[in-house]
Structure formats: C-alpha cells, structure tokens
Image (spheres, rainbow, N blue to C red):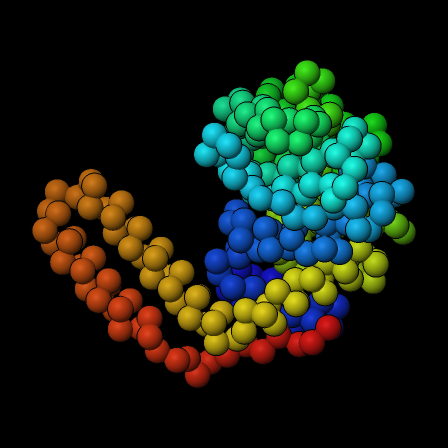
Length: 278
C-alpha cells in the first residue's frame, strides 16, 4: 500500500492509511499498541503464554524526570518479577545515545514500580552501523528479536527490526512479533505474502488497524492528509530560507503557501475513502 492511497484489500478491510501514519511516524504504531488485544499479544510474546489476558493495563508514559516513553504496560495487581512493567519504544535509528535513553527509562520505571522493566524497541529503520548492531545477539526464545546486554538495568531489552522481520514470512505459523513488526515498519499489505494473510495474528492486527481507521473517519482522514502535505511544504520552505541568497523572495512564497493552508483547513472534502468493515 502506498503511503497516500492503496487499492482495497479483502484481507485487511481497510483501503488507505492517513499520511500522518506513514512508516517512520509513530502515530499509528502508538494507537495500535494501545489496543487491548495487541497489548496481550505483545505481553505473551515477551513474558510467556501463561500471562492472563487481564493482567496488564496501559499506564502513564511520562516519568518523574519529565522524559516520556512511547507506550508503557503495567501490571494490574502483581507488581513483581513475574509481572514486570513493559516499556515500548518506536525508534527510527538505534545508536549509543538512544541506548542511554533506554537506561534512563528503565531507571524511572524501577523507581515507580520497584521492578526492573522489560523493554521492547520497534526499529522502523536500522541501527547506526553494522558494527554497532553486531553488539546485539539473537534472542534465544524468539529469533525475530535482537537482544541487548542489560542485566544491571533491565530484566530484558529486545529489538524488533525490519531485517529480522523480513526473514520470518512464508512459513506455516507466522511469528506474532514478525506480524507486528510488519505492520509498524511496512504499513503495506501488498508486501505480505499471500500465504500469511490468513494467519490469526495478521488478521487480528488488520482488524485493529481497521478499527482505528473507522474511528478516525473518512472526512477527518482527508483533512488530515491535506494538513500533513501543507505542513511538509512549510518545512521545506523553512529549510530553503536558511540557505537561499534572496530570503525575501522565498519568504513571500512561504507566506503564500501558509495562506493556502488557512483557506483549506476549514474546508469539507468531497473525495472520501470509506474503509470497509472487518
């Protein structure tokens, strides 16, 4: 599916994704990860299939020092080693600076819950370098994940990467984390092998995405798409202004684009995409 429009699909039930949800952005990912069924899928993949479906809830993401994680799952009652908090980060590029951020989040989680957290990083692009990535190892319980050495600051820290996700298709039983990684890093139904499109995890994720789209509404998606495009134009012109030798001319062009945005922001759009019900 392109980031702007797609052909309809009987497998997923949705026909398009808003531009604000394109790969590299984490808006769809956050909504998806907050779905209770998706939360349970992740919890059981990371902690074990014996975890009850009502054991966790979506918790606040802001920490005491003002930093903020993308998604946090916390145990409802049993805050112990068997039910650790789970921190999820959606990260475009993984480098050393980001690892220090994870350590900070883990420290804050321990202060709040008195239990070392499990951390899942969904990598939407890559690691800083192949040499840096080589410092991580394949998780022994789930070959779809890379694992960092974190014994002193987290119970577990694993990374779901596009590279590993792509090696887990065309099999009878689709790895649930591979299916999740596909939706978060690809957002493209046409890239999923036909063999896997009836997999229960894939169908569950498709249904969750379709529900998010139905909540957003076709008209809101149209308006959001236009606003997204105009924001991109604004940023492009701001970048040009920083380097151009004739800033007055470029400023005039930028003002004309901003004026166009104000005129369109309040409009209703006749072209609408109606997601199918699942």
